Structure formats: structure tokens, C-alpha cells
Length: 365
Image (cartoon, rainbow, N blue to C red; front, side, top):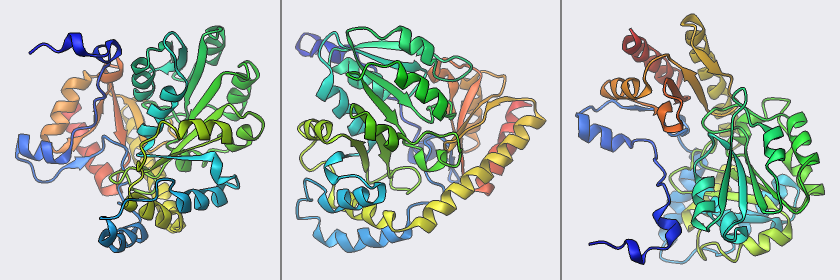
């Protein structure tokens, strides 16, 4: 059956997002029981125990629709960030926020500027709405803001800044962000994707995007409970922005997009600062173990302020990916971003990290 004539033309041009391989799929394919997944930037400590307990209690109420406005959760976030709850939009994970933005702002022919490579869902959302992608290659593994500015024109509607950038893991500093914003027209919306915010703020050079929002209303900041809070499985992300933008974005969100369990878990996770601190501490300990090994092997790698590292192992990443997979280690091969000899590896427990190094060492030999 050929349905191509029935499709919205933009859909036929979309490239589907390729997620990391699920543990269950690897077990089934290879008959391996002990799998270490370092592919999807998940929290190796698991979810906040407070969030788990809250979910268990709330499970009795899943016959009732959730609060469509996620009002209590937005109030908690508003208090945390010292902003008005009307400036917050909840999403079914960060990915829904990244759909809502182009659905709110992009008309056919509008342009969106982004780095290349960066998180793939920016391109998906813009393309779906008939927008034009302006991809700017990385310069020294970082966003090339000079080229961003050179490519701004009357059709430019959105600028995406993934900070830290996925898949590379490094940050754009306060100084670099200041330079960009001084040269971007006020009527262009700048999106700061800060999915790894809690890890990145360990770097004193990381910009304070909420301070930017105070003086630049056409700013959207994306954050999530998926990473540091360990709630990837219940899907809860959010945007911090101006009241005006939040009002318009809320028109295109799913009515009950944040489930009862997601809202309940997120509220509990906000109260569990100890879990967040332990997660961030473990993250940087895992980096230290990997960096030491990479330096011993003279592997080029990018110092990261996320919860993953980008490393050049000098071999075809397809081969390395498959060989690691056969030994029960799941990572992300760099060929997905046209970095053929690079790997993106999530941080794990120290035991998981050491096991990854042990197996990688066997593979490269």
C-alpha cells in the first residue's frame, strides 16, 4: 500500500529519531543477561526514592485525569526559581517542549539556526512545520556563534543553543552567550536547552539563563526531571519563559500531557536535594575514571559538563559499538553524527564505568 500521496509533505521528509538500544532488546538479540547501558544519559543511581514512594501512593488514583495545568508542580518550580508560575509550561518530557516551540512559532519558510551536530529533535520539530533548518558546523567542537550571527536574516525565527551540547557535552560560557545575545535581534526567540543543567552549574563559567530571561522575554529555557532526578521513564520536562510565550505555547500542548504519576514524582524529586547531589558527585567521579584511561591511551576527548563524554577511539564506531554490544555494553556510536571514530558514553556507577573501560580496552586491542 502506497500512502505517500496522503502524507503531509513535511512528514515524508522527516528523519525519525534513533534512540539508544533498549536493554530488553539486547538481551533478546544476543542472549546476554548482564547488560550495562551507557547510551541514553540515564541516572545510574535510579530515581529519587522519595519519587518512587510518591508514585506508589498516587498509583491508586490513576483512574482520575491529572491536573491539566500541573498547578502544584508549577508552583513548586516557580518557588525554586523565583519566577511566576505563569512563566512555566510543563511537557511530556523535554521532547514535547521541543515540539511545542516550533508548533507555536514556525510558519513555512521561517528559519531556525542550530549547531551541527546537536540534539536531533530541534530539526524534527522545525521541519515538521515547514521551517528551514540552518545548520552551523561546530568550530573547535563548540557552537560557532559568529556563524550563527552571520546567518541571521528577516526569516530567522528561532535559535537553538544546546548547553551543554549533545552529543559533545561541553558548554557555551557566559562570555560566549553574552556575545551571541548582543548580536541577536530582540524579535528572534533564543532557546536554551539545559537538559543537563544540574551537572553544568558545577562549571563557574556556565551562564545564568534565568537572569537573561529577566531582560530578554523572547527566551525559552528547557529543563527536565529525566536526567539528574532519574525520572526518564515517567516523562516530565518544562520550559521557563515569559508569560506571553508560556500562554501561547500552552495552547499547543497536550491537554493532560503531564500524567498524575509524573507530576507526583516530580514534586517529590524537587524535595530530594540529597539524591541530586549524590548523582552529580558520582557523575564527575565517573568522568575522572574515564578521563584517566583516555589520557593513558592518548584518546582525544571533550571535557564534559553533562552526564556523558564524547571520545575519539580511532576506530570505526560501528565496529566498536557492535563489539561492545556483544559484551553487554551499550553506548552511542559517533557515526550517527558523522563522527565516525567517536563514541558518546554516558556516566555510570564506578563499577559500570570500570567494566566499560575493561571491555573497550579488549575491543581496541
